[in-house]
Image (cartoon, rainbow, N blue to C red):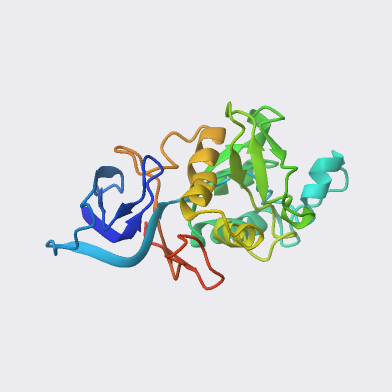
Length: 250
C-alpha cells in the first residue's frame, strides 16, 4: 500500500484537493482518496511531493508503426504509400511505446498492421485500443480558435454528448517525442485562460471515455489509472508554465 500526497490532487471526479492523500493498493489500484481540507499534518509512511498529482494520460491518436504518418494523411484519407518504420515494424513500435511510457501515457489508440506489432503493444505497460475496432468518426480534428499548428493535437470526442476535447500525439514522424504533457504545454501557450484541471480532463478522462478504458482517466476507487506528478506550475493562475515538469510516479 502507498499513501501519496502533494500540494494538490486533480482526480477528475471533483475539485482539486489541497494536500489530499491518494491511497493505492499493492496492485496500484485506487483504494481511497482523502480530502484533508488543506491540512499538512504529518502522517507515518506518507509520500509527499511539491506539485500536482494527476492520473496517467490517454492518447487518442497514435500511429506507432509508420515513419510518414501525419494528420494531413488522415485528413486527405490518402493512406497509400505508408511505410513501416525504417528499423522494422517491431523496433519502431517499441521505440514509440518507450516514449509513451516515459511520458506518463497509460492508454492509447493505434492501428495494428501486423500480429507481431500487436504482441509488442499487448506486452507493454500501455493499454492499446485498435482504431479499426472503433467507429470511423470517434474523433474529428477540432476547428476552433486555435491556430493550424494545434491541429493534430486537440480533437473533439464525438462519442461524448457534449463533444468534449481529447488529446493526441501522432507518430515519431510528426513529433520529436510522443508526450501528452508536451501537447498540454503547447496548448497552454495559445490560451492562457486554460486551467490545469481542464487540461487534465482532456488529457485523461475524456480520452478514457472515448476509447472505452473504464480503468483509466480518474482517481476513482478500484481504477488503476497510473499517477503522474506535475511540478513548477503557475499556482496563482493554476496553469502550466514553460518550465513545468513531469515525473511518472506509477
